[in-house]
Image (cartoon, rainbow, N blue to C red):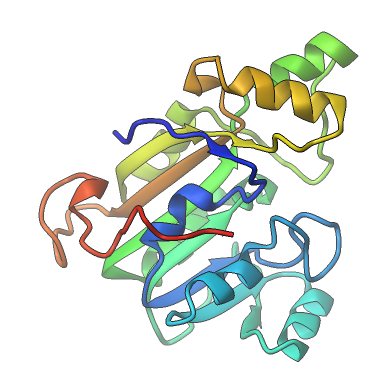
Amino acid sequence: MMKFKRYKNTSFRFTPLIPFVRGRVLDVCCVGMGANDIMGGHDFMHGKLKRIKPDIELYGMDIDKEGVEKLNQHGFKVIHQDVQKKFDLKMKFDTILCEEGIEHLDDLNSFLKNMHDHLKDDGLFLLTTPNIIGLHVFLGVLLHGQPRKNPYHTHYHTRDSIKYLLESNGFEILNIDWFSPTNLKATNFNARMNSWLTAILPHRWGKHIWVVARKKGNRKGYRGRSYQDIPWASTKTRVG
């Protein structure tokens, strides 16, 4: 397992997984991240990927028809599709990623089958999701009597539950860990407290879970069983 790393002065929730992105990429649930608008804010991974990884062939997919149309008007290649319904894009991908999207879905088995069917044999499935036992949940209960609620989330995960879910749907975990983006310039009291405490508490209190997975039984493309054996994953990739 990768030693936990705290990424300071970034609110980009996909930071740990950027080095694993390559080739033809499908970014699912890509509309409106971070600022409650179509193009998103600091967490608009789809736009950042296009700048950080200019050599990739980037596609998006989302159920938000209006959002898809607007992104395409800005030069993106986004497909209007419910990721939980069966579909066939007539192509497969080197990388499929889902950043803070799986917790918005209802039919997880159908979603993961679609991802599995569209992933190349030597491809990687990357995702992040909120950590239900993270520090932010504890602080919400401590300070407000309940954790912060997102009305669009249908479920939450621990590291063990997301591992079980993926392994039950044909994936093999290469790496799974916790991640806490920290913003040392935050002016919001809760955000500042979270950043301070993140620096000293065990990493299992991280706000997000991040996963690198592949299809079960496939060794094509590289040797070994761990993410360190993936030749194109440079940890020196610049993010920001």
